[in-house]
Image 1 (cartoon, rainbow, N blue to C red):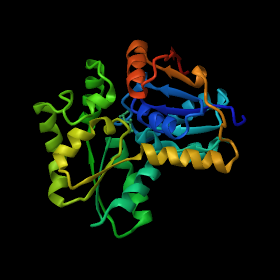
Image 2 (image 1 turned 90 degrees about the vertical axis):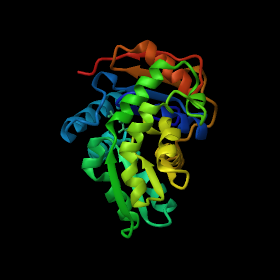
Image 3 (image 1 turned 180 degrees about the vertical axis):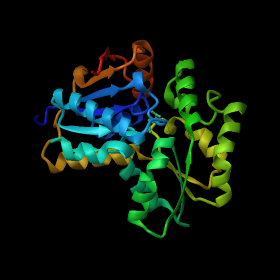
Length: 286
Ligand code: DGL
């Protein structure tokens, strides 16, 4: 592979598009190949070794596409498979947990940090270990919020508006009484504990930021790892002399899904990334 090769990014579905968006903002010249493993979404409730197998399979497929770097844009897959992928593949592999943990350790003042994520990520203790490796005095309170993944998927499929509109404070897509009650159930205990920082430890969750912010209160700082991860990607490519120096053409974005939801995927990618010309293909992983 060389500096003109693509960056490979994957997630269990389309949550990782929030990371692609940040990479494109910081590195507009790079080509990206994105794989959404929609046929096996959600990863959150699955055993770690099963998810690790998926990570191995997808990294093999991406290296077959000659990518120069892989981003595991899914916290559950990062927790289960990042170490394995870094050991088994020749290209650099970057996950989303460490960048989010770093930002949280930097942001907290009272050293009480909440983490909301899938069950798999919470059970792995990946965030508490990573945050406490930076500051062992931080207390981390983790809560699994599986219904948030459902809410995001459902809302994205139902609405035609651009993501910016959906996540605006006035949006009624997610600020509905039923969703607000679910958010309160998940987040009230964290609010009562007095956290000052909350990690959105699932790549689907930044899309729910207004709903989450409303439930925990304005005083709590929300951390999404997307921007930090994109910074890690930029620094890694720069260090290796592999940054592309010219703007990617229309062929700069290629999307693949293991699901049958090509139209959904295409619509969602268009809205998250604000790009009209999006081409999505189906692939079967063996
Ligand atoms: N996007 C995945 C993550 O960041 C969660 C969705 C799933 O359960 O597959 O953990």
